[in-house]
Length: 608
Image (cartoon, rainbow, N blue to C red; front, side):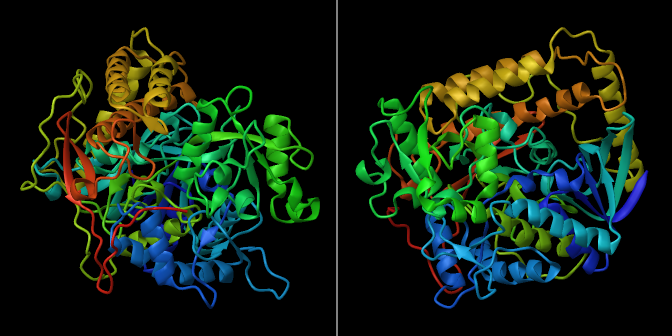
């Protein structure tokens, strides 16, 4: 068994920044990651980092843009904390050696991005996430922070009080991918989940294959609510054959979208008469699919993105890697012809419910980055706001887990026994069904070390059952069943009947998972075993996403309903939350916070 003050689960941008902050606060901190840190998905971020750095811009304008982009489903305390602190964190990166692109006078360059009222996106070519990851990892190495790489964390060691608000997290269990052994990791201070997104719930995604929502699913099953999970962002420019991302920086530099009739449709069809291609991502994604569905797309269902007019010199200076991606993955040279693009799953606005310090309702358990929902992005994330979220709230979670005293939070978390649960009929049985429900160890009266020991024993038994079981199903067919129904029914456009079908398909997949078995009996780098465990997480998260989408009868941000095509502020300026109670998912709501100490954000029509 390993022991540290603070354990950070995940080695991407949020995890690295959290670890640095915890170490600076005096904690003995370790990172546990199923990948080597510089292979984390943060490295795929291309576009940039929003921060109000220049005269003429302000954190207040950044906050207002973020709230509007979120379609007013964000919480003001999170938005303002974020906008105030982003400039300081960007300058910290600069001092740590982040190789930002620069203007001729040497100042850090900033360019326009969708939904921004000021060109406030800093960047490092079109490889911003890659450079960010390496900059932070260098600081981790410099500080001597322990990194347990290629350990897949599979379970949280949490006490089992009836009310999740009374529970405590003491550590995690992890599968050593190199040997197949299950090990215990104890945290005397706190565990920070920074495990990234859940893109593998869909079959066309910009996310890496490692993004299976592990942290979200583990937190959910020990009693932490998942918030606004129906809010899935679809990026408008992904390569059709692979889902590889084409950065919003292309449109920020002046790239143009065309349909098969040669129209620059964002303007000519009136989708965004003022901002055109620089409307927010939800607006552009719906416009593209409308063009395709009405017969003005190309080939197998895409539109074209053209950047030839920018000139080779500018393209190779600021967007060089896009040229390589289009050539290698689509066989198109964007210096000579437009690129094919279509929307693809990109980001989860929802996630593990936290306050503005990264705390969950369980003592000693924190979350940051895409795995968390501090309610910053609401119903739609603005491009360039994901990377600053990683280091603003990653740093907050790190400091808090290390024991730094902070002001009382403004954002409430945890299941509230006084809040009414929605009593509605679903089209099928939800939750565990016949699957494992005893995910919280029987450890209310155990000492932390003994509790972790119980968790390790339970996880070793689970792994042994998967390796020696006699089931006749493989994880691949089960995961594909989930991915296909999510893409068919819980995509950019949604309607009630399709969402009900998706819930029934997910329920069937959960039942099939009961017969799943691992065909590879080896212990060394057994990806069959790893992906079988991940598939359980995919099933649970797909169900929560679909529950939220069916429960919200309105269209807001990335969530568009065919039968309810307007925003309904009187009833639905509220968050959806789902918490797991012994295998029974419960749905409840909490009002969005639109007031801060200085301003009330009045919802208005979003137009670009």
